[in-house]
Length: 145
Image (tube, rainbow, N blue to C red; front, side, top):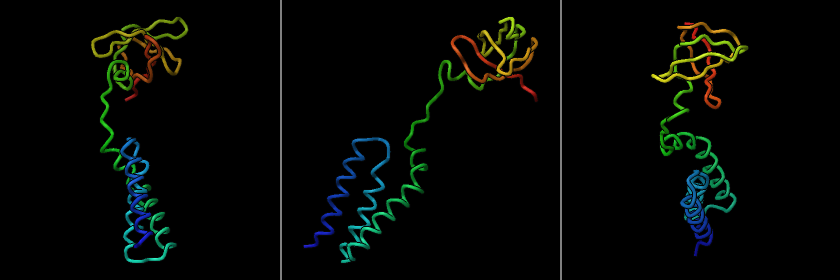
């Protein structure tokens, strides 16, 4: 009986079970490494070669495929509410002056209180880009196109 192959098979099952209980793609690579080592054991390779194959296959797959596979299994999150405002372009409807604490920007049909990210005055009718949102205020920079 080939005990090395049985050991690698059991390890592969354990890694697959661990992967099925998480969604973070951590142990699937080790399951593939175990499969490679098990195949080597079935061909009666020495234990040191099996271990080298396990490590090499696991590390190679982890390094080369994790980011690619992650793109396909991670859902495309659609920005909603405040998250959708960041990066959008708006128009200044009331001049922005951080010292006086005034300024309004129109973004997608809604008016927001606005402040300048660069702490400069931005005149009315200027196109701006939203850098961040803090509470009910957007922080913007002037478009320089």
